[in-house]
Image (tube, rainbow, N blue to C red; front, side):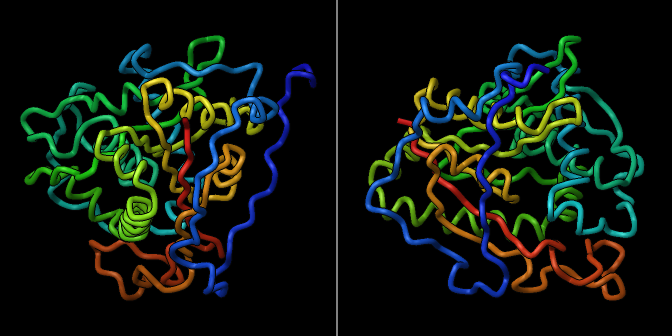
Length: 320
């Protein structure tokens, strides 16, 4: 590739460690949030790859993006790669099939990658509150999510996005697939959703405009981002920037991001994102040790949710 087409590398983003106790939890918020400087971020954006809305993709391509994302998270995401699955697949899955607009199929292999694939399918591509007999495509996710395709129209990266709701509907009952995924990722949910709740409450209290935007469904959530090896890392920021543009185009005023690694944090800070909350991975043990875990519990070798002495940083990005 022509070197002139390569975007600049994002500046390094420092996260606190477990012993930096004064930097844990809610951050001090500024009086005003800084807008994205759309001109300034051009130097980090890709000149080679452009994004496509999921509305332009086939269901097969959308599931391909879910598979790429699941593989990337199983290999690279600090929590997903460290916490091990329960030792036994739940019996309720053995003869069960899941039916949604993407097809009718069994759960498949009991692997970290396949569990995360189902997490995406159940929590992003479809709505976990829909009744089991009438599961629909999550219109918000498909409308706002993006993919990057190669010259052969194969998916090589993408971002799952949605609009933040002021209140979430309860999850459906009696779904063995959904029940399993909730059980597997409860430690992750406890960290991320607790952080999200505390951060959003702080933003609502500090900024009246944010509170009104949330009530009017004008706050976007940049949920997941991933790439395959075919998409160079230096071109991946395009997915974050294009997500922000997509939200702005649809009238959203803010974008929220729970950045579980420092690259995503760097992408948020390139967009003038403001740090709202920090949750360290290794400040306390969140999962059983392998010797203590039952066959239905996720576990890790050391009881921590990640081997990385880092954490998840929650950002708010002002779009307009």
